[in-house]
Image (cartoon, rainbow over all chains, first blue to last red; front, side, top):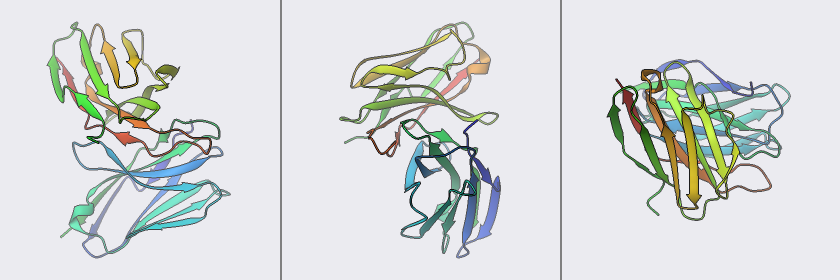
Length: 111
Length: 116
């Protein structure tokens, strides 16, 4: 399966700390995307990184991609209680327009 | 734009009944996706359409599930007959495709289905 796997499954940190989530996948990709899901809501797109990119920033988010290791990481700096959510990575195969979502990391930020 | 619209938001039905979920994608988007999310299986892609044409329905669990997209602004996912194991949150998402691969998918709020 192309489905990505996030690690850890759950993460609990104090407000102000950094949170790092990892995603591993199995086959060559076109791009990798990270999404966030608040409880009871739909997923919201955070950031997209293409296969020829190694790092990308958006506000307090930093995403890295290592295609040789087939892995990506999402770093949230200076976390806030409002960052509490589940975070999913999603991968796409070359030439395809659908995404394969991982199992998600449940992040809890304690105020 | 109001985003992806799904209805109903909640549905409670009895086993054996027909269930119809509805989705209105974002105007101008040419891809529409139906997902199912459960604690056990996570987020599963059921089917997706490009320009109203079904492209991949390999995720549809069985013949009881069917999906249509009669026009660019409307899609339905039907379960007939419904079973308790169909209980899940069903999401619709839309996106604008491109030669450089899939773009951002915009998700609706989901339909929470409970089959008794």
